[in-house]
Structures are given as C-alpha cells and as structure tokens.
Image (cartoon, rainbow, N blue to C red; front, side):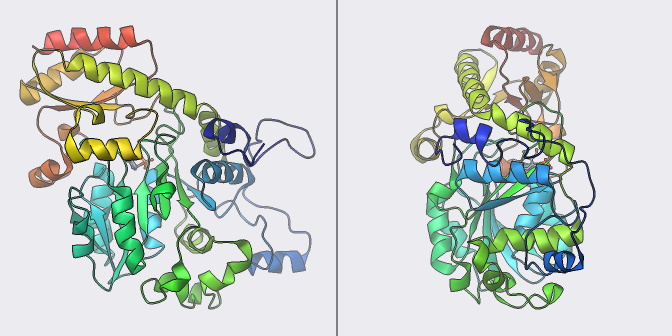
Length: 430
Ligand code: PLP
C-alpha cells in the first residue's frame, strides 16, 4: 500500500509495515546512540558512503528514518531529514547551499524566530538575507544577484495569513538555478509545494504534524525535482569538491541513490558537524501525530472557518484576518495553493488596541495562552508582546503585527465550546 497517492493512506503506511524480527506493528523507538558494525570492511564502507547503513544517531536513526520516509512520501518528495526543531530545519535548509558572502532572498512574511535567524544570526555568519514583499513576485528577481543561492518563504505565514505565490516565485528561480524553499508548517496536507515548483520543504513538526503539543522537531524534505547539476556556478555547494568528504561532488557522488544530493549533503555534513538531530522518542511521537494529520487538518479548517465567520459578526473587532475573507490577488493565491480549507489560524484586531488585547487573552478559559500553533487544543497569543517582540516596530509592521492583533490557533474541540469561550472573553475585553 505504500505506492498510494492518497495522504490519508500514506501517513499510516509509508516506510513501515512491521518489525522483521518481532512483528511489532507500531514503529519501535530505537533509543540507541550507535550501531554494531559487522566487521571492519562494513564500517569502512559505511563511513565512505560506499554502502548505506546506520552509524551513529547524530546522523541517522531507524525510528527517524520511518518518519523521514513517511513525510517525504506525503509530500511527493525524494527523501527527508529529521532534525531537532523547526528552527534547525530552516537554518540547515539555507546553510546547505549558501556560504559566507552568499545571499538568499526571503519573503518578509515570516515567523518571528525565522526573521531573527535570518536578520541577525545568519548575518553574523556572513550570510545575507534580503527581505522582499511577496505582494510582487518580481521582487524576488529584482533582489537576485550572482551570489543568490536560494529563495525562502512560508506558505501560509502568520500573522498576515496571506498565501505565498509559490509557482510564480519558483518559476523565476528555476530560470536562474535558484531553488524555492517553502516553510509549509501552517498547512500540511492543505498545500503540496512540490506540485507548484518548490524544491525544498521545511516543517516545524512541533505544530500540526505532532499535533499534541508534546515535542519540538523539524524536517527538511528534498523534492528531488531540482536540476542542481545544470547550474554549477549558481550552486557551488553541490557541484564542487567538498573537502569535508574527501572531495566528493555531491551531485555526482549521490547519483546512484537518485535525486537526493541536497538531502544527503545536509545529513552528512550539517547534521554531522552542527548536530541538532531529532530525538528518536520525538520521532515516534511525530509518527503518532502524522497518522491522524489529514483528519485533524479537516477539523481545524472547519472550526477556524466557523470562528472567522462568527468574529466577523461581533462588535469591538476592527478586522478579521483569515484567507477566506481576503479579496483579489490574495484570495486567488489562497484558492490556488490551499485545498480542503484555509487552515487553522485566525487573526483579529480588537478596536480597543493593546489593552483590549491583553484583557481578552487574560479572560480566556478554554483556550491556552501559549507560544505555539497547531495543537489539537485551541491556543491564543498576542504576537506584539511575545513571539514578535524582539522585532523593531518597523519589522513588526512588515511582518503584519499590529498592537491590537490577536492570533488564534483553532483546535479540534466542539465548535460551540470554542465560540462560547471567545464570546465571554470578548465581552470582558469590552
Ligand atoms: N516555522 C514556523 C512557521 C513556525 O511557526 C515556527 C515556530 O513557531 C518555526 C518555523 C520554528 O519551529 P520550532 O519552534 O519547532 O523550532
């Protein structure tokens, strides 16, 4: 059944049937650091990549491997790499291609932590991230020069919740040998970025994929759909000898394994050198989450739509932010790139500004007040004083955060209970 094209089946069956020795149906948690080599020749072959197999859990683990295969299959990609957090996935996605002196063009519409990584930590490492407004896809082309190695964006960025023009920007990049990396954290199942030309997908599995708010993790997925070898000057990291692996040229060395140069390099160099592997226990928990992901996404979407519609009818609310009530080009993008619903996130602005926002959040009883999204439970936060507080006021405005903005991550509780909690909190916020 692993050749199914249907996500509902893939998330239950891809990459695993049962344990060969015990018959265990659930994927075992391989809580081990290392793996016994058969003999010295076997060990030498594994280290030389002449044979694929387990060496050390910082670089690979059999539990993580099932999660990687399953997510790659869900996305229609070639292979995946599990890492310790969504942040690590975003950093690796770029560091795998760009070196000091290179640059990346990124959408301004980003999670605050990613913004910080790009604007500060990567800058300190000599890597320039050029931020452009995705309202005009041509802005990506205009910011490109000879040292541009990748484009980066979020599919459904919160707080703006304006869907990114994936195909438009992927097409611009493909002309010049520049891959589009999509952070699809907010809309797994609903959007399949590889079908629109993206080359790499990153996830914070912490969110919807885990779904139960118990583990931090991230995944990079290689679409296997990008012609790295056709652009040797644009993509030197994959096309020139790597001194850290006896001069291996990744596009050549990985040829017998399929179109996986990008992900193999990330595993064998970045994960080896920087660490940040996913813990096998967390991979197991993400596998549990993945099994019900399509069902949960449906429920998140239905409830979020009902909340957006309800909020639109209440007084004291200046605006409701949800893809379903956008017009023109933004609505076209939402309809072109999302299917099965508009996601589980809803934003709104209270007419009473910051004070009303605080009062509203402090009055919630069912909703949790947490710095997370994508939990089965409903969550709320005031981004201006929390997730986006380290940004300058100008940066906050660029990413869509205003004083009175409240972000809701709508869970899968009964809709009547969700609305009842919002209703009593709104009444208290005035
Ligand atoms: N990408 C997006 C869209 C996010 O919302 C987050 C976290 O909130 C991340 C990446 C970072 O993920 P993590 O918290 O797992 O490091």
